[in-house]
Length: 340
Image (cartoon, rainbow, N blue to C red; front, side):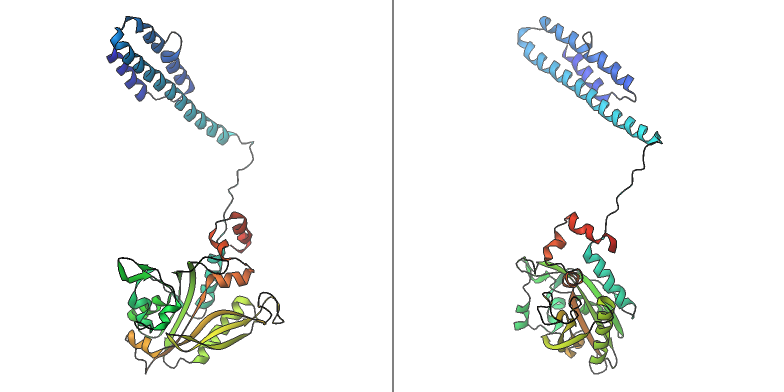
């Protein structure tokens, strides 16, 4: 008797149907009042008492398998027929697919790259996991130099020489090692710093840095390049100013401010009443950095600059919380559909 039940289990498992009629025939064969399974339950009286429990469990398994097979086939064929009916009903309205929008950081990143591409800058990228040489030492961060404390770094536990890059300046080193001047490139990418997440800071964010190396490159070239960018990105009436600053890899170094595009320089909450907004750091490439990359610092000079994409986007669209960029809130992201 058990062999017969196992045969029916195999039959149920291998059964396929293409139409509702075939499913109904299967259901009648196994589950109707005069079907196979009720007949087998009627045979329980002929099974010895010691085998009756096991036989009953086996019959319940057979009944459940048959019912599950019917339910599955009905659901599958029902969905298929629903799709076919919808496809052939020409009176139904069109089902338009709602297209998504580009992320605001992607929009601004592309806009920045496009602006610099117009004046001959190419795009270069590099690894997000870097060694100490490319992330620090080649950029004029000697061991034990206090400038290393300016950036809280995520080091790889098993190898203190390897870390998540703290800036895309590491890509500048890789490009200078592989290419000969003239070099004119921008370096967009994601960077990581061990900082507490707040409305103004995050443990990972995005940068775009730029580098230009050639003979007779001057600070005036740097100023004019950044002025061009500011007027293209923020508007033709934008003014810039450069304030002395410090970065290990540039000398002299500067911070660049733009005239507030919200109040026109009169003073508002965005510029904190000063009329100016800081957007990037820049400077002339330190000769030590050139020499570390085997570029003759007596023959070539260059400038570099870098800006945070999040900060630039927040200024452009007046966004007051950096965390909004990473929350995947569709209500926030849909505001940029017209910019895509």
